[in-house]
Amino acid sequence: MKIALVTGGNKGIGLEIAKKLKKLGYKPVINYFSDDVAAKKACEEFDFCSVKADVSKEEEVNKMVSFIIEKFGKIDLLVNCAGIALKQKVLLDVSYEEALRVVNVNLMGTILVSKAVLENMIANRSGIIVNISSVYGEKGGSCEAVYSATKGGINAFTKALSKEVADANIRVNAVAPGFIDTDMNAHITKEERESFCKELPLKRIGTTEDVANAVCFLVKNTYLTGAIIPVDGGMQC
Image (cartoon, rainbow, N blue to C red; front, side):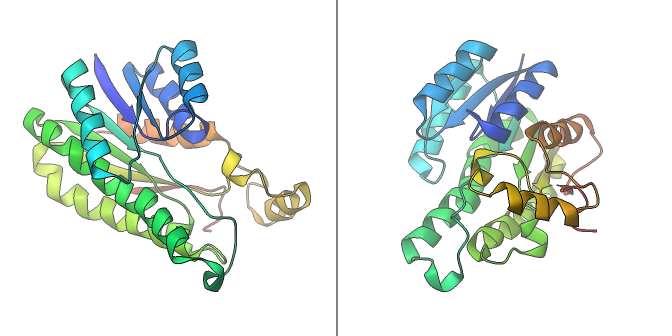
């Protein structure tokens, strides 16, 4: 049985990824931060295992990974999907505490969980890591400066780590979504969505399934590492 840890896997993009991975033959273990109800529902409905942990805290991350390895013996695949964003505002209006939280969850969370699983993957000389970045990690987003910085950091981290661990037969890639229909974007009005879609070559907002399909592609393609795959409807064209 292949074990997949999906951080932020209790809803949205993370949940859809976990569902798709199960169809690929993985046993998904979903990590979540606070929504016990959503995690319980996902586990009951899809036969997942769940672990509650704040990915920005090293002690909690290490306990989570140790629990999974003790229970299942290994981690074959890690999908770093946990992430947060502030409501759009200029950098001058972002407090130190707000900026630090976004950096700690998005970027440090990805680094900490990756580091925690690597010892087991290296020992097994096999593993896959897929990081969820963003189109803003490449092109930047106005009024999303801190968020964009964290996603740009994830892109650089992905490329660098892929070189470090390739000799151990571990692949590291990333998916960079554009505007996806999730709770994170629920505050955007219908008029704003329609205006945004007019500027996209594909003329529609992306779905969580679009992102999950890209993750599965990276999981299945054994000769791909260090790649950043955009899933953005042509936003970067």
